[in-house]
Image 1 (cartoon, rainbow, N blue to C red):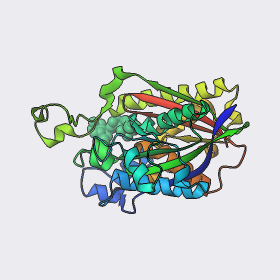
Image 2: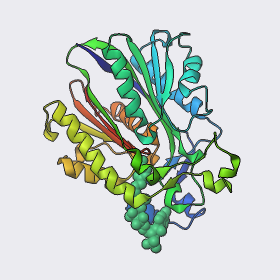
Image 3: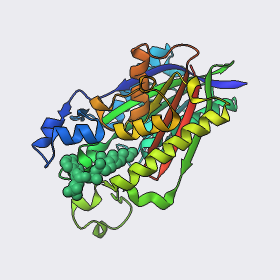
Length: 324
Ligand SMILES: CC(C)(COP(=O)(O)OP(=O)(O)OC[C@H]1O[C@@H](n2cnc3c(N)ncnc32)[C@H](O)[C@@H]1OP(=O)(O)O)[C@@H](O)C(=O)NCCC(=O)NCCS
């Protein structure tokens, strides 16, 4: 049976660091509040770079790690909700910037913070059909462009970042074992950005009306439930128990959400990868950025079972189980 093997990872976080102390000068907040409620200490924010720039950098580093030429890539899928333009898609720009072959399919998927796992799900399904052999999957978001820097409820939570993986069609037991994607549009008001490009400008009375809106408390509870359910679904589908997991790489939104998800599963803390203290919530960039770090830190070995789980605007939630 054909599976998608992750043969290379890459990422890019912009070099400009914004510490909690820097935010104390912008809004009524404190390092103590942000650290204790979220676990975040600092985040990266672009300084002139665009979504296409950082997606391309992540893609190039994943290709290099995989030892794969851009000409071998026959599918590009990008998860993002902060594209540089309404169209062309970020994937089309990446295709051109990395020098991939003309004519291959390249498209974006919109699932907010679940975007990378949605993109992985789509690419995996193409590979399993035997149609595509080498796919580039990217998660990228620049939430610094859509948050209200005067709103302390949201501006302390997010950062910018991108991550990418190269998938190769291989036979054998290693690779993506299963992916699980879900959505419930009834909850859309818990997290949304009403920047409505295709509706009347009268829709937005002031620029503030177009920034991201969030019902933090409500979202917190749904996140813990859906991430836990998605993880359990992945385990059940593969006949595995939490004890079989070598590493859980969750969406990096809030330390308390991550810990609650781990507790629900009965996962020890040392088996949960956390880097949100350095990057905050980078939305679709979050999981591939963490994966790339974990790989570079030597925390992922051949044969390891890696579990990914995310939730995000939509609402959407997703999981994936991989035998490395
Ligand atoms: C946003 C979140 C950190 C808030 O934590 P919380 O413990 O639920 O805090 P609350 O919302 O109850 O707010 C508690 C108080 O802190 C205040 N507060 C909110 N943001 C603050 C900040 N940055 N600094 C200081 N105080 C802040 C609130 O105004 C509130 O004050 P009040 O009690 O006087 O009204 C938490 O709900 C969360 O992480 N939710 C999920 C958000 C998320 O993950 N979004 C992305 C999804 S992909």
